[in-house]
Length: 405
Image (cartoon, rainbow, N blue to C red):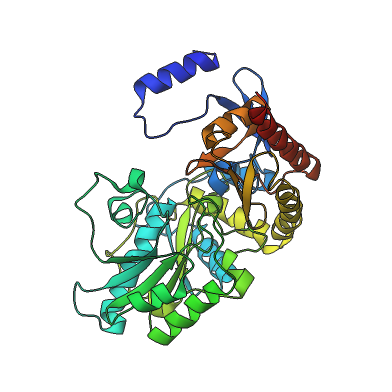
């Protein structure tokens, strides 16, 4: 098995069809570029759904991983290891929080936040046993565990996976009054993505996050920000909440925290929130392992300088300026996003998002559709300005080609 066709055929025949990949088999990658098994190069404009904010094979991250691989990879949390203290202190400083609780995947971090919010509700707020509720948003995407899909409004993620976990109230995203009406004495938290990525890179109205923060403070409930995709530099700030000067009670982090090398996720909060967790009540064999912490420590050091955030802001301004110029021309209906992250709506008559993604693939650009005719663009933040402009040109030409077959 050496060619793309052979590898794709076996993959399709021997794996569960829980994904629908584009027909490309990647063999190696450096920076913003990948190469397939047939030797063709592509510009990566998806970045592993923001897991690769710092590009493929970032030297500092790879060096940290190599050095740690040669020393120690796993102890379990039955013991301390020499990378853990730096990870907890560094991520705590980056988020401005007292404590962190490390896990592996973003979904695990969200599950952690849900458990912590409920326990906090019972032990601190005084909610009656088994009565806690958490307010969530339409169009949310927080993962695919059985509890998380219980409050998903995406039929693909939700349907036929019941019985569903109770305790969630779904309201319209961006509507502060809807949250206000859903709050009652048993509400323990509001779980919100500062920007909804899977829904099409939806940015809420200006002031919305600040209003959520004020409401949560006034009502004595926790604001939980899922920054798994939006956090760690992607939007031009360390966290998307920073645009409104908002500090949530809990940050939920993942994806880029692992530097594109290993799965690393965490919840960060102050002691009065995360302090409700005691030994034996939550954890993971691999959560906070030495390799994960070494990689995450390198990521935190990169973010600490602020250079990557400034680069995302600068290149993001260029990306959005160029994309907005296409609206109303060539089948582009709307553009949304922030920083180096954009959702581009294509007129349905032009084709599906997958058809646009395939047209981009032929032109050497990797991107992915979501929800029909929306294309997500999220290149690594290390991308050069020249390559970014080239990618936008390829996008423009791909849409034109679909208009003029």
